[in-house]
Image 1 (tube, helix red, strand yellow):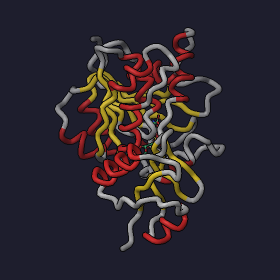
Image 2 (tube, protein in one colour):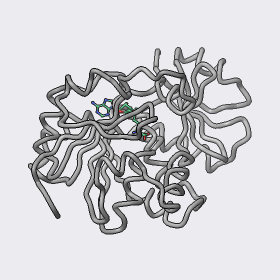
Image 3 (spheres, helix red, strand yellow):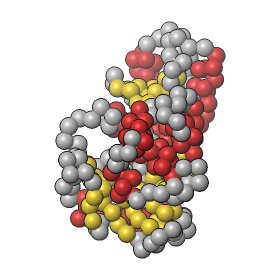
Length: 267
Ligand SMILES: C[S@@+](CC[C@H](N)C(=O)[O-])C[C@H]1O[C@@H](n2cnc3c(N)ncnc32)[C@H](O)[C@@H]1O
């Protein structure tokens, strides 16, 4: 049998980790392999898998070729601390995000942007994150629901409020009513980072690398009451291809935000 991924536990683990491995195996329809002191190389080799979802006391991680993908809110924490200190967060500024807003994050990834958006939109707001990779969606959904360290007041409630759906954003957008979210957000993998980013590189193991389609942007225009925001590398030709109205972002930042006004106006 050849599978892409197996589920197992860390070498040091107990019944809770075995139970959680079983949960992920059932959820993702992947084989659950008892660890029994064997190396990951041996287990993945035996199953012809390119990687393993490993449940340990500390976390759940996808491990492949020496790289690890796991949920951690550290980058969101930094940005939230910045916001609390009165600094500008360029994504929030480009969105003109307000408490109570409903945000559809069409490219959830590791959930950093969604958590920051959820923190700002608050208890009266709503953040839904769409992720095409079932494994990544499962990892991030579990992390958002179970991560337990409140690095900043309000962080854990913001994480818990993010709803995760596993789907291709085009099919999800097609089924949504017009104007059902204030903002629709895209942060596709397509752009080439100028430098290798420690946060993004492991994500490439699991992420859908397809460029953002014009069709997706067209669908998003219908769903977004106020605006569609697209994150890209500064100077990217993607902004012109996707037809943004204007480009915002910090003058010295390597990334920028393309904004499409959808005409919904004030709340
Ligand atoms: C650059 S990452 C997003 C990072 C995210 N903004 C964050 O803060 O962690 C892009 C993500 O979008 C996902 N993606 C790409 N195309 C998609 C699609 N058509 N539908 C849903 N998700 C998609 C990829 O799998 C990847 O996880």
